[in-house]
Image 1 (cartoon, rainbow, N blue to C red):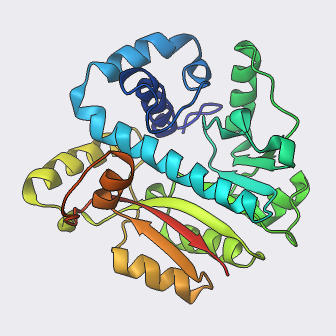
Image 2: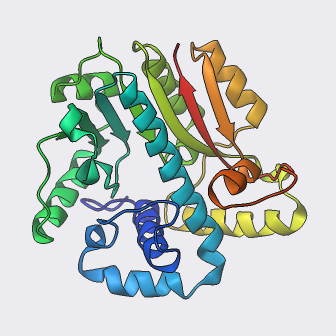
Image 3: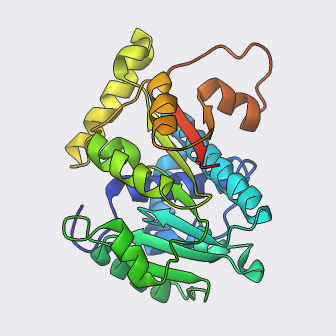
Length: 279
């Protein structure tokens, strides 16, 4: 990550969300701040991504994971949850759109201090006011623990919380992923939504070559994929640390739920979206 800049992959995800508003009309996931958060370079980025048909599968996956996460958060709000944490927030805009603010939902954005400073300056330049329900929780993971960073920001560990952890897990070590999940599982009535990818060997040859090339591109940007998971291992590991309710959507389930696919739900290797709740 360049100093005082969000990661290249975080910018890419933000562009995908913006393009989804245009090419699919935000049908899966509506985000009125998607273009504004990209700043002055939005037009060029959106044009580049819009003209590349090969980016469509990733765009629809990113839109679907955001929809899945925020639908799950809405359900958590109905159960009384009033704290949401966006881990590795990057250019995420949920805190700006927070429809649950009137109910008292506090949103904590966790990211590197330099990245958060960059984002706050971007919001200022675009004339977007940070709402009162948003608290920035800067955490330098090389020097600070997540628990301490959240505590200093006013997060209450004795109260239920919902964690949105999107587009981050593949770039972390297993040790870092496990530590974060154990922290979440240690909170009362906690819940987390995250995404992960399967090992490359699970893909059929044709798609494997495409995904391998994508991995090489992000590695060349200095953001290599570090961790893949077998779906069966994810469920087992989540249960072992205390999560009792687990929902894991693979590409086939995502296509049925969000993309209008019909017929047999044949399993496809690829990205997954997981919801895990401590009950």
